[in-house]
Image (cartoon, rainbow, N blue to C red; front, side, top):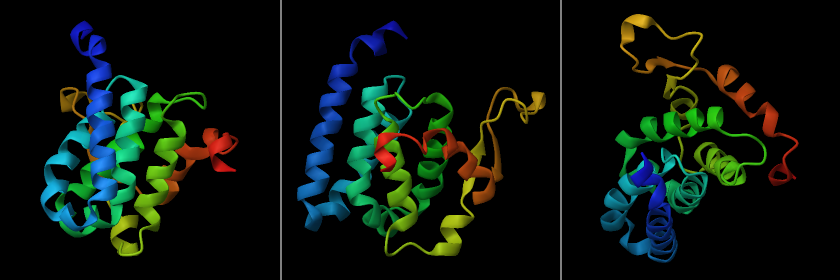
Length: 161
């Protein structure tokens, strides 16, 4: 809506605060992470590219704690993150931040490899959507072989060097 577009600076500033709070308050993550993560996850779905970028940057440094403290939120995070690639091009402000977040999700030391490879991801392909779903994304398990091609357009991006 026009109202949301108008106040992107407020959301951006709040998420910058969350980013720095999560980065420096490691010992308080069990208390801070649940409400901060909810806001950052909402920011990942924001229509403003700068807000999505800072949301990625807020979550990335706390990714190990997300797996440990909020394991029930990891499917949503992964689903929203992969879906975001449909809205990007290589020049988007959030491209490098999103690439870093995907990297952190799958390279976090404490992550269970099998669990990460089989997370439920919303299938956002319009071609594959079922009209009976009433516009809701179809939930199904997407293998890495189905997800990684979404990254191909970004491999030449400066953030991958």
